Image 1 (cartoon, rainbow, N blue to C red):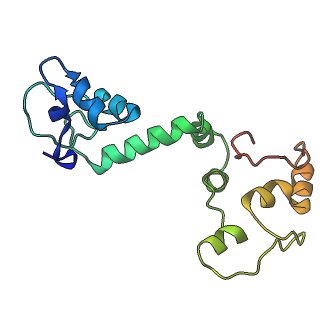
Image 2 (image 1 turned 90 degrees about the vertical axis):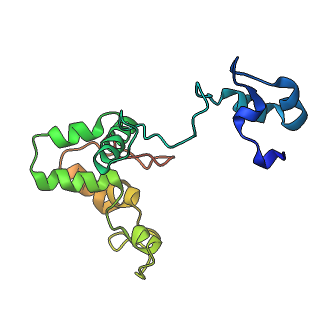
Image 3 (image 1 turned 45 degrees about the vertical axis):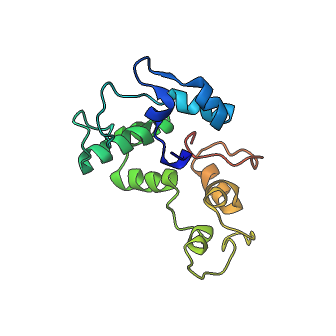
Length: 166
């Protein structure tokens, strides 16, 4: 039997759940041996199958897929989404801020990424590019708007960051 035809059970002692170290050393490097040894083997000789982690039944549904996506997305932004949706501001402002945080505002850079031919650069300050970061932080016109609205405006940042802290 060639390596391509082997399954994990052929490389592991299924009764003790440990790897056949001699066989593994002969075929694989250390990293691959570690990965193979970390694969759980089921109790019994059941056929492998797919298991969806979003449902206790293991079956995928659009509802569970959506729920899992929302949970994972919310976890990566440290609660920004929940603060946004519970904020006491008009719905159109929530929608606009959602677009900003999602990066879906149609800036020149975004439009060009999507293959839409538009003239490059910021139309307000003649900067060579118009990214989301530029449109809301770096553009001299945007900075004037933020100042007029009473927000503290800092100088240009050295590294790009998200808008979660705004």
